[in-house]
Image (tube, rainbow, N blue to C red; front, side):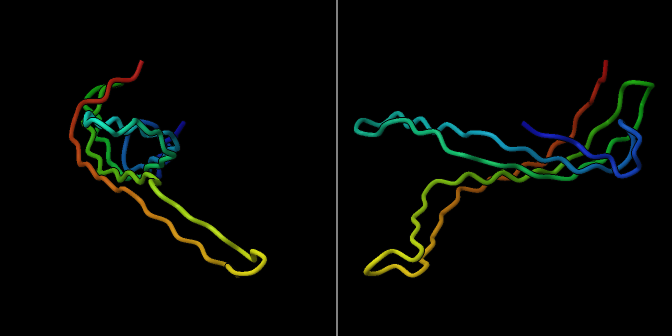
Length: 102
């Protein structure tokens, strides 16, 4: 699930921001390890240069963050009093391509 927001309000032209929520599947092929699916999100910025009415050159950079480990706490009777920890797996990409809308 995600979306795109064009800064100039004209779809297919100029700068934009993108983002989304989803799931990432980790499937190791080593014995003793099992596949896992984790919550993830992505965000990025791009620019579209029109080449024709529904075709544009697209330049984009995007980052991905997947939550792979977490522990919590909070008030916890007999200990805790707010202990929150998290670990993420991050990735990034830069792309250039042709976008065709129809």
